[in-house]
Length: 534
Image (tube, rainbow, N blue to C red; front, top):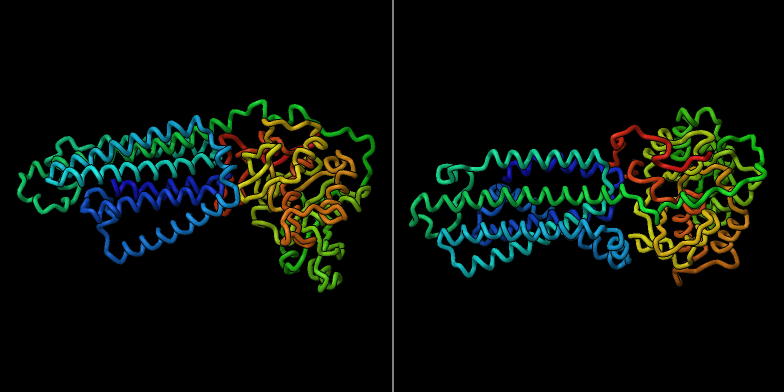
């Protein structure tokens, strides 16, 4: 079964890596599971169970050592990441988002798979003359390791947000593999076993009749095929369970059903249709110019004559030189306080009556710039886009009254429920889920900005860099790097009335390197990545 497994690994890997919403924190769990599974076979091989391992263990010693080194390095890295995840408090977030009613059947199936696979191993060793006591120990260890490997790998699947295309693709691989395994199942073990496996290492094997030597190997081969196929079905169950749970929006997370943008009695007119506000510190001006030039080439943006405004917080740079090198229309120097959130709030407050119809807020070095441009090209609509998130968006959201993420951030200041009350006009309860944003890059319309009072922005800015500055990081918290800035970064969705979980889910392509852009059984729509104005 080793050869079919190696053949299937590339397409399965591509399917997983093409996840449009692949959770980066799920990768360590997935790699730990894979490394543990390889380590299990290494232990079986060292105990004389040559037939228990895949053909990998028949390779040359140099290749074996290289593969083990890579796996060991990956395992150490992933264990470290997992430890940091727990240390930062992110594990609490993961446990609260895993659908337990789908996870329990996975655990049961993984235990059944491990015990059945271990039984074949035990019977084989007993039939070839192995000590029954050591056989029981090995079978028990194998079962325990199987449970751990399958559980960890399945757990990582529950952290994904797969599309139906990906679920069906993986499901077809599982079905075809199972069919092939049934067709190749040996009907005459004694005649086919020699072709299926190498002989077990056992000094008494040659004393037994040839038929008796090969029959247990064939049974073990069948058991290995059964165990492998069952693992594939367990993983498929994890993907289907996650997809079904995400496709069943409940009343508790339908924020848009009970909120609306505040009516605006007066909309100031602006001659500018699109502003591009860039938060700069020490980034290369030529890279800014390159990004802006590419931005202006997007068809839906080219005709809007975007006005580029750079706010720099580097006191050592000449604004005039930065303006000339970057090609910006305006360059303004600001004190180095408040991160990019302070820059954006400054622009909104000081241009309250002169905001463009739509504004792109971006950092001088955007997170995955090519993906940002691609998202703007596909999902930005002049006069229609109300809020378009250009960064990574946690589609699983957080509890409004206890908002936190896998990076260790916690809404200690209670900003999320405050903004939900002021922007969405609802009072959060224990069941209210909201989405949070990352990277500080987004598009917002003047209608969404003006939907809440100017005093709300002034209050946020005061708590970020003013006299009432909130300090959350102890001595490490400083005006130029305030910990409260991380809260502002995650609050833009709530602030601009686009925090509904069901509004933007798995359809929006991720910004990861392997993020896919194919549709989930339907063409992409403007609502996939943002919120539209009426």
